[in-house]
Image 1: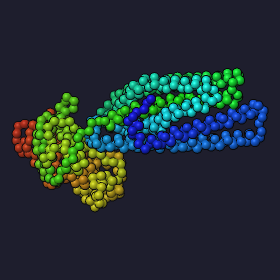
Image 2: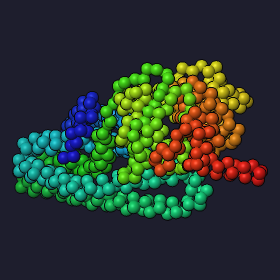
Image 3: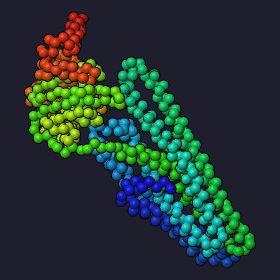
Image 4: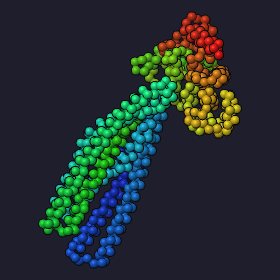
Length: 577
């Protein structure tokens, strides 16, 4: 009943802690039985009016001793429960992280980032109840009725048999509920993930929503998703409450039968008052473990539903890992008839070109033409393309991802700056960089003076660099990339939406890099690619033109049209100023 073999296999060393949990629960039960027998015996002595002070003292001491023993067992149960769930959670989180590393930067093709956050946090937390409470309680619920049956049989075989026969009614009710709950909880987690997707997307785009006054529409859509989540949550709670009522009726109804039989046998003088007391007090203990299991069942079901999604991610197909390494620092990149699309929508169609080392190759075109897709393919952020991409003649699929990350550095408009100091952000590019190296790259991007005017390399950076201007953010991201010192640099709209001074400085650094590295500049501003050795003109996913600025501007084609249009606009803006 609700035993997931794969979850059990993930327990590892935690199995022994679950064993300890069950063992101390059983000892706790024996302590309870001992207390009941001592009190029953005391009641019998009082009933026959044959009690002595010595017997009373012995009984009190025994009860106190057994209560202390039960307290010790309770502490050990709590410790075993915590350790079992802690170890499993750590192991699952490690496996989840390892899986994401194996999937590489293309993991978003298998699962959304928000779902990863939910699974790694609350999803795995839900399994704490499964391993720390439900699973031990399940084994204990099988052990406890058998133990009590052995205890009560010598007193009254009939009562013991009737109580034992009523025990399976609770798991039967749990199994019935499970069939209903499985689909419902799957819907619950599906809606929860959907709500998380909407929330994360709206949060990340909050500024844009406010600018375009679209926040009201998104607010309404978010409210609708929240209401759907509320409805499915209430259905889950309703199912849980109804099932608890059913289990209570079975547990306490069966206990009442045992108590009634004990009273009847006592009246018939088939058992004495001590035996009747023992049956009355232990009748409930027959069913309380299973009743407790039922209360854990719903939480465990929630954990099981989340585990299904976790294992679905674990089962996500991994592309065959490359093992080859790029040996030289001079890098040539070749695209051979490369095509790529999302669903049936083509993004790139039969693109073929060569990018040579120690020169700048610019890729230009309208938004949606496929420029950034080329960068994503080179970084292995997306897979599933047709054709060949080769780096120094080696198929990109055969190159190890770690080696590719060492070889290619991407600097984009959305390069992330982490909360911390300037130095901690720079050291991500090269963990062995000295302070002098950090200051040198800051000087190259014209940030050294600003940083030294603040608190030097210890200057605090807020999340996403929110305490820096857009130009400063991009220049710090560029400085970090320079420390990485890779053979290939891809600049994907790295100069968009920043001040002219910062843009000019970044372009200057890019030109200097192109003298010794393989540089790809993706931009919409043609003035920045004027001196590029090669310019690829993309439109609707196809390479329309290939050449340098002088060659392309003299052709009456797309590039000339782009150039003339932008030139006129920039002249107009200059006159207006």
